[in-house]
Length: 293
Image (tube, rainbow, N blue to C red; front, side, top):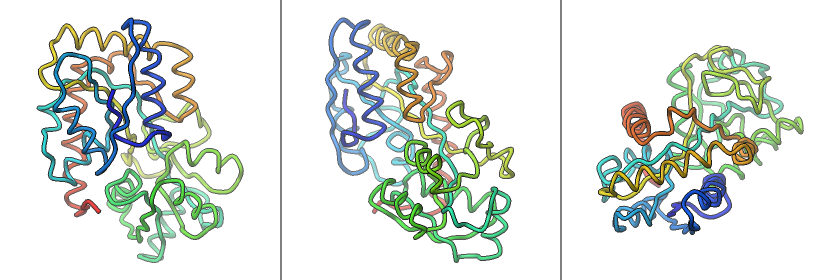
């Protein structure tokens, strides 16, 4: 299974959890190979060129299979060159702010940003990352304007949010929740249509006053184009078996991720979802003139 990001992050961790649990139904181990570089495009390029025999899989994400298509000139077709297997996880992100921010809820944050256009700063993991794109969408839906500060990753951005060097951040649960529990930051809303069981006290953006401001990066598994349908069916069965395991679901919840409903775990559902995500996000990314760094 090619994982197009470095070892140790959330995406790699979930891929390893699933690969280990898929061993039993498949009757053989899955070896994870981290093929990194160019925001995941190198790893996907290798997966596309692999033999379509079911022995090479690609663990991809919202960033690699949607956003990269709007940011990079790719040497492969994100839809046509892959066979969908299953959607594996969905991770709604949060709207967070420094502890000393002069607002106590999302409406207050928007009012403060409108009263101080271009003065606030938002940390991101770089151009085209979830935090950046979520911030652009925030600006569009709220009518606010602020500056983006790119970091080399989510962790250093969160460090500066905690220290008050930046004002706000669109943040992932794994980074944000420990800081919230320690009382070091504020979280105003989860960017989803329903509250998270992992953070039931945090309101949704709909409840907090910015309806429709959703950002929930996701992961899925694909095979190279031309992989026979019986093989896709067997691989899908192994994935759904793993996702039904209570231990796996607990591990994903600990990483801030939700398991999609069973009806969303089919190859057909992933294909439809993937197309819908491209149709939604490409215009937003292109209109914001987000370019590869």
